Image (cartoon, rainbow, N blue to C red; front, top):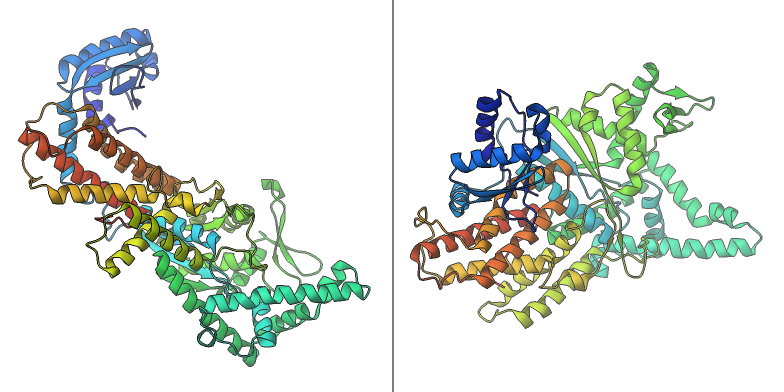
Length: 595
């Protein structure tokens, strides 16, 4: 990531090419100078040569001398082949810092009445089990992308579609009916989602027992799986649910309500929230009207058995089922209807982001393609935020076998670990118990979210709780601790950072590096928004913290005998703390003022 130097040097470069060669250059390519060469800024000259018709080295030398004579900011230059390396003055960097110092919410765009509206879908759980580690990645990723899009000046609606119907839901219901003895969250002292998940696991245990018995009776394994009594009962319950059986719907609503209450507790613990909700039970039939329109427009076709399909072989895909022969919908039908319903609810919507694991890459490729073929121009504004799975040292998680890492248990465990570590390295004696508890939660969630978000979404993660909560290295607590250190430094100082330091002409090289890091923050936000990639923000925050800590360890902030220098260093420290806090907020991470 480089500073956007073009705004500083483009006018004078344009003046040179127009006055000396009567040529207009559309753009210039700047890079940070490589460490093995002297300089701060490198202009790549090769793309300019065809219009001037001269050797790259000659043009670079001519440009270097011109800039040296015309700009006080340029102290020296050197040429390496077709690269012009410029040495910039300390005064230039002081000037750049002064420009950003008093910008409120620096790097974040303002949202107003004409800001585009986008929807970000994340979480989207099933109502047959509690949230687990995989859901945590989905939630923190979707929430962070929503915050990053807001920082890019977009109005964001955070939503989810809750998968509250289907055979998997009926499995929990059947198991509770047969084995639950009227157990409730209050009677069991379990969160509602954990109680329902307990019976989803129970179904699988009893289902496997029945399969074993049927195999002993002479059934093949496949026949046993299809004819196990528990599965047949679950299938019958699903049919009764679709027929609006009153008793089935009453139990369904009761158990789903338990789950929703449990989910809200987890969301609150995780620090995520939603602006709207969609439910599969209300949307799964919506796509049927779209299917009718597609048949009429000959986008879809019917097979002899009455099922409806779309042929995507010309696009390198295959034929995709959209409606079963008995007229029932599939997931694709539901998603077509839900997408249109969201546009009907919010006609001004300019985009939708679906935060869903990469095992659904094909599904979303097909969904977006079908919507385009149906003539929906807004389909171009749909994006699948695909992400890799979260692995454990013990292997892949399986919900029905009860081998998942429960989100609530993980958060509690990390808070406990944060307490142990922070009390051993911190100075918290002056905090009361409530303040200590809040701090432990802040550290734990910062560690968890940062460990997940610092990795490119497309990559798989091997989650290591111990490594995530380390106070050193590329971790959330390390970034939080630096913010707290700066806040403590400022509190101890009696220096008014609003004092003047415009006259400062000399900088320590480490001060220059911190300013360079601050300068690129707006560009990082823009790129993270374009790529839907919080890892860019996370790793920027780490680079900023590293740069500041190098400065802090080698330059005395309060010990300088130069009053102007002390004012500058406190102002620099305050701006770094502000940007750390703002960047962390885009990750959903709070930063404490003391650790």
